Length: 239
Image (cartoon, rainbow, N blue to C red):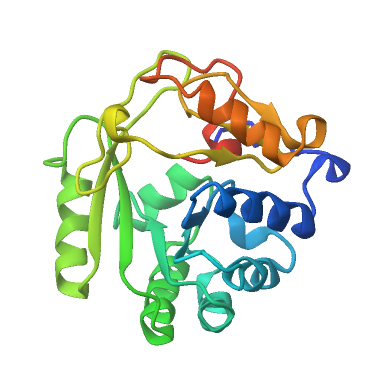
């Protein structure tokens, strides 16, 4: 969380649920079978459970997941599962309450632990933990999170700290992200831009081009590898 907070997007620019569903449906027609709801924090979106329900009923979606900081998860886990969410990733970079509060600008790590238990109880599976590391997975915080995951039956993914502006990124340990040669992902931003690469400034607006044309351009112009993105922020377009 940036010290100065985040810049909020005007409500009128944000896609409605029906618009999101239309984009997903168009993607399914082009072969997309997996959808992940990510950040900013998806659980602060009003009526997020209804969006999950709408997407889960689209014929052709075989895997619907979410990445969350987990703080509100205890409130929504059961409803999300009932609405059709299959699995969940939870961000957890440390087990220290003090370090967690520092990293998140005041977050309560106990809420995350409660969210993990609620996800288990609801049957969201697998539960994956995203742990950001500064240099490697042998760091004290990373080792403690790994031990916690082993004891709790959770899967862990180590994500090396990235920098959009300088183009610093690497393959996720235990996951598929950051592997450019095998990347087939597209991102839809909250205001309706389809981005073919996180580390690139290319973006195609569905409100201007229409969903089908935006998809076509994003697919046709998807770069072979990431470079830099000096106009985006992780809190707005996810990791």
